[in-house]
Figure 1 (tube, rainbow, N blue to C red):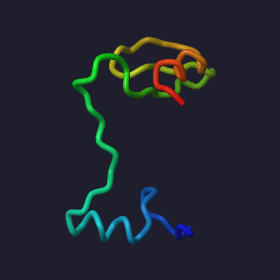
Figure 2: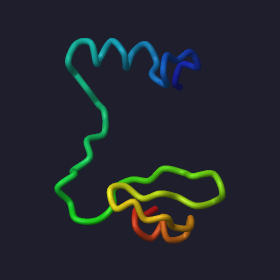
Figure 3: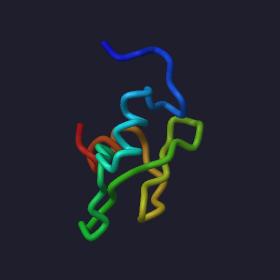
Figure 4: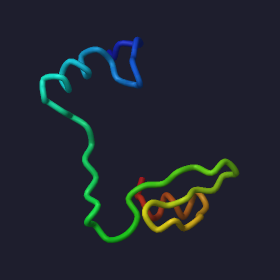
Amino acid sequence: MKNQNTIFGYDWDEIQSMQQGNDSLKVINSDKVGDYGCDPIGNGMFKMVPSGDIVSFEERTRRLGP
């Protein structure tokens, strides 16, 4: 069970691990062709990263996977 007390979304065990150099953060391969992320723009649409395309939730899911 994860501790409910967090700092910027990380619990104390994760912070200690990062301080000791044991980063467990997800690394994104930016050399991969195509979009690898998105930002919500507030009306059910998403701005894809890095293409900048504005797409629906369905298209976002198709591009990024489940």
